[in-house]
Length: 148
Ligand SMILES: [Zn+2]
Image 1 (cartoon, rainbow, N blue to C red):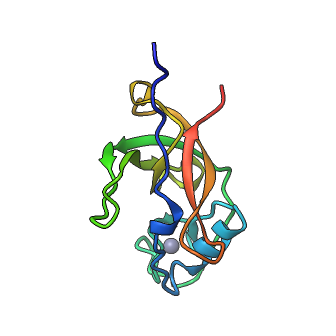
Image 2 (cartoon, rainbow, N blue to C red):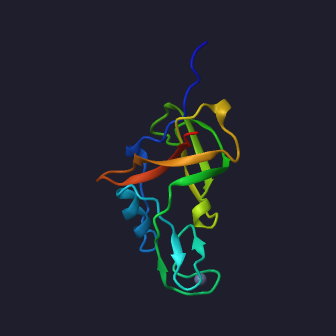
């Protein structure tokens, strides 16, 4: 029996990071392979995606604690083709919504990689890894099944 195909990240040269003043701290930490999330200085509420104001207390002050890198699979879909008309190649790619338990349960979109389709389970524990994204050394988080 052939080994099951494992999911892969999108090729880094096809990724373009859209960075704003609000998201810059996330990407700069990612470049150092640290997973962070924005937290309110006043009430501690985490928020993802980053935003200028806390939705809970309206404070504009925030900080970016480094997280454990652990996640839980909340939802996912499976793509078998690259979503770029100029690059019609085959790909087994799993865009996933990953819950971050040590950031108040906020959810982050990232690729789920190195997993066979039949092994994917909602609620499965995950660990962050880092993949090349765009040029100039930028990196993006991706997730793999957590070691047991
Ligand atoms: Zn707040």
